[in-house]
Length: 240
Image (cartoon, rainbow, N blue to C red; front, top):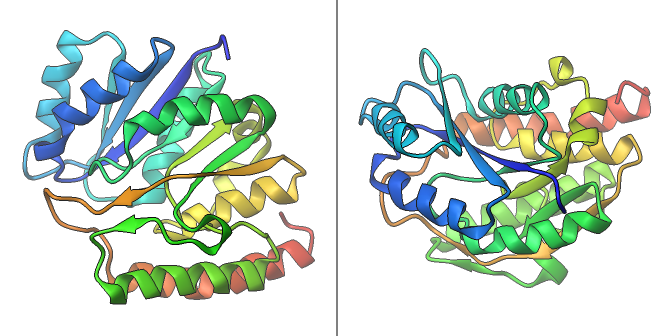
């Protein structure tokens, strides 16, 4: 890939991780830039991002008014990327659970795909470190449920380490994306699949955060439960 890529990273209270993450991402490939989308983090993540931006021309920052959700943060980042000349756009967590070293593998894989997904469960094998068994079982079961209901045979539909060709994001009507929590990951993949794009999974090892706190809560789980059958109905009716 000779074209430029953008790594979109939503943040909320990630000051402890941000500087290390930025340096590691930018070290992977000179063609990669970063966009931080900060939701007015009380811990000063947005201010730290601005300080880093002043020193690093490959880093940009969007400041939002408050905690508006993961899905809307990515949509804002996608729109920002599409307004510029980026050929590929990444999703990536800010908590260092996604190892920046995998970015090189994504760049290789996107040569033969339109959407590349980093999979924690490829082939049914679990590659998650430091999660409690209850959360692991919830995540693994959610992926079985999503595969069964949507019909999309991807092992890790809820993962958030992904790479899109810009053509995928251009083809999806971003104004119609309804999910805002982790169901957003399922919805974007299903929409890409239904439009005939090529999806590919690559194996990653997911290591739970060591700094900060998880954003998972009951509302996010409930959204995913009801959103999956809704996606199936939307697909049947030809709306996606």
